[in-house]
Length: 243
Ligand code: G3P
Ligand code: MG
Image (tube, rainbow, N blue to C red; front, top):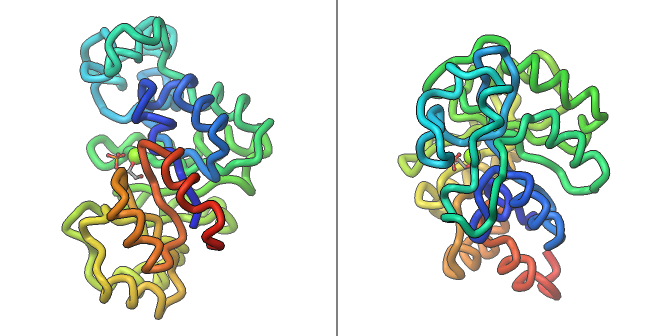
């Protein structure tokens, strides 16, 4: 079972910052999950919300700022003033850094609220510029984004993201549209959903699993991945368990 750091090592460090990514890499994670949105000047940036209010000391929408303006805000707000100034990373900055490591990156395209025209092409272009194509897993709550990515780069795996309501016949759906993975909130999983995905050869990466009960359940179901804010815990727990 692969361990993915949700927004980096976000349990301890400010989410979606280079610090959180660096700390996840130091733990030896298999993968890093991050979220991308687009600025006013068409730059792909790593941030979870459409607005910057929750995670930075600024206000307003990501799409209303240029990247030059955006990078002046401090994205470490969620953890108080413990970690000093941490800018919102551009996706390019992230890729430049990640290319020297062996983990893969689960790039979640945040197109569910605003559909940022061309974000799939731009994201892919950056990935290719840094030669990261074989260490990427795309996901999105918006099936249009992963469908578009499948057209542009069919060899890169994609996961269909859904919340705790789940998706009926998710395995069939993913297989039918060529998505290799199902990415549900763990609350949406039960024996039948797992069985149905396995029947169609679809891997399951569940989120956001921060407790031992969830970890044990995913292991019992033989899921492919766990997306967690505390990646050190499953990494330790999985040692010596053989899968
Ligand atoms: O990709 C899994 C998870 O990150 C989806 O939810 O809101 O944390 O981006 P969210
Ligand atoms: Mg995410």
